[in-house]
Image (cartoon, rainbow, N blue to C red; front, side, top):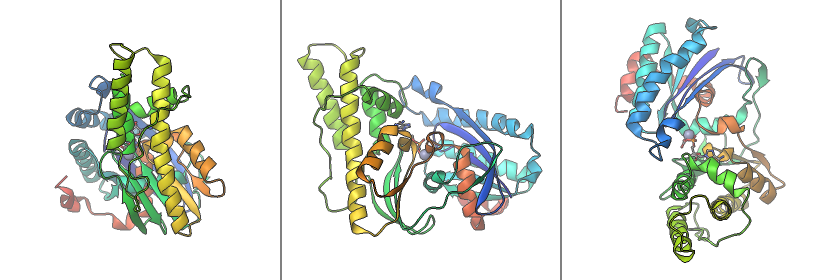
Length: 344
Ligand code: KG4
Ligand code: ZN
């Protein structure tokens, strides 16, 4: 069975094509990705209408790459990311999938973007070879850390899960992006913070909001404000006009921010592990591309089975959508029924 997955929730245009032998084995045929980073970089963050315009431009071109070697009529289902995401960007994806479904007369699987992040840990990003789909021991703690979300779940399996807590304000990726911007680092800030943090070693004390709170919710906007205040103070104290070029200082600030934010993630995960009998931990979403986060999880939970996506599958892409689509294909809708999603 062939499933084409289409991703347009934010600033990555992705189309992935996966062939499934069954629920245990698959082969990736294509992982087409057009990043818009360069376009949004000049604005310091994603501009939704620009993102939508780029998706409209990129999607036909990415599909053409697939069509070069593959007859689209062989596709069984078209999966697309139905949200959450930027509204104009989602509309581009929906319009594209709708017209493609009409053209090749196939059913559409609307896929929740967050669900696709969780599934991303199951596969290797390897083109053209049959691979076994990873088996996950459940129950598991699932943590999604992305630019828009910080969600903690108790998962009985991928489709049966309970949301234990989420961020009450900014997502963890969002504060990394915003704080990086304050340090004059280019968008997206997460990978920049990771890069600079590796060279930092001095820890500036920062608050860990809600860390001692009884529940599982997160809050990161206070950390962001404290970080901005700290940088402002340092600039004033050192009598400098801006921080650009102060490599050692930027590295120590990045190190402090990353360490603080990640310790909050570890602390809430630990709390959940202590409360529930679990057999594994799943961490996914763009921030899960961070190698330091991965090391910290392994350090703090040495006896747990921990699953991270491959770095290239942590951030948004079409393969994750095709993969999740396979497991929820029973929810496929006829192309004419996609009107249900016209509120998008
Ligand atoms: O999942 P994703 O691609 O898009 C959303 O669904 O939001 O996540 C994007 C987020 C951005 O905030 C980005 O800065 C962050 O993931 N990110 C990282 C890294 N790579 C991407 N954060 C920390 N370290 C990284 N290496
Ligand atoms: Zn995402």
